[in-house]
Length: 151
Image (cartoon, rainbow, N blue to C red; front, top):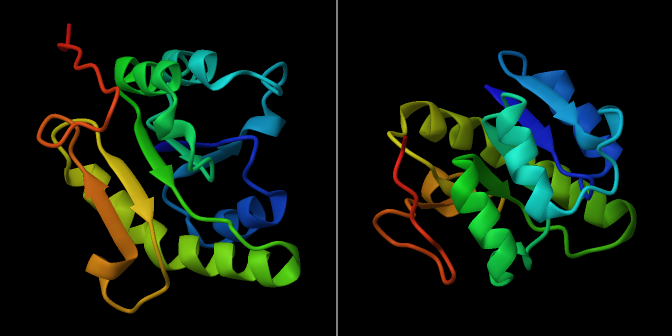
């Protein structure tokens, strides 16, 4: 799978992921020429057109913005969100631990998925059910979700 890390994903997290997620291509948005500053409504269709499968973000408010939700739905891309609520080194450590604990399981879910999924990485808890919250938008559509039929 090709994963695009959103601009809001810190570079140290990208470096940590690149060190242990070896069977997937991980690209940070800041490393794609001309993509820095791209608004989310434009980013999702652009990422889909460039062959990405997943966008990883820490923008927890994205799913509350109707135009962004519509862009995510229309793109068909999977979305993985992780919390990054704390500042400084402790916050970075929590974010890296949460993503390191949950991302391998999330990618396994996505590889088996028969459609778009929205995943929230929630904690570093040892049980996968506590680490991941998976939404199938066809079964449980989020607010502002617009279903698109595959062409």
